[in-house]
Length: 338
Image (cartoon, rainbow, N blue to C red; front, side, top):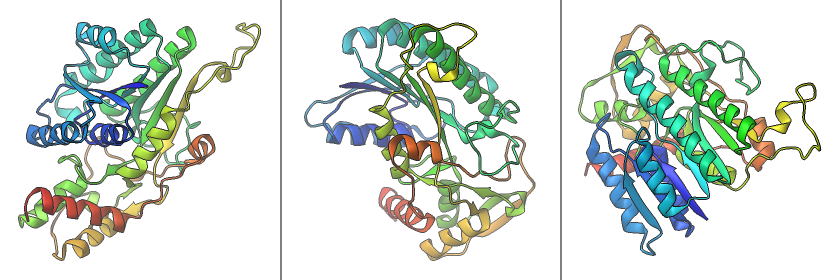
């Protein structure tokens, strides 16, 4: 099996590639190594992947999703069976500053992925969606069958657009596709723009941490290893169509489309102030706190219902926030020689 992982030098992409390489899968990693955050971190992740792929089962391509010719060359040369699209312009708040980046990467880039999958008859397309698609939804826990037609950030809108685009291609061209709505992923090698990294870096460097909505926020923090276990199980289980003899506009239903959407979260939401307290206890230092109002595009609470995921792959994320934060702090200290 040859697996293309886009965003391979990103946080989730790096961990997924590492997992697949160690399982002796042939992995093709694609990343544009952009400077949304410190490129040195991405380069270190890439270096780790190259180091562990001693059996030459990892190839890296530096390219943008928007570069259709690069994708066509990649598919012609490596002929991947499965595609995991994790490349995207991330970040809710940054979408307020640079919306064009989200249109290019998350919309144009994803449309190229769909077209290349259509023309190469891949076995399964897995792609990253986000809990952000639920917007200001006040019905908890979030379930996949809830309406998600009122996104409150362009990032969320781009992810919902991906789900709609994938459904259309699955319907028209029978491309098996699975979208994963990730819930606040954290852990070693994490993104520097995420709360755990920001808070940790501020505490060690004696800077105040910025606490939005005065700490009145709740998140379904999900540890990276749980996310990776879910993705790897999903890869080998593509959705199928019902083998009906005939289809018509009258009897057509979603069950006949090889398309799935799953929440993937811990289902154990944590208050932001409790999260900070656990971080302080793990580090052994108190944080200087700067309380700020709610930011545009943010939501007050997230909570995943993962029943559908559990039924599909017999797996439920379960790593505690205490263990997850401890693992991150151990990595952070080692990485920055503290």
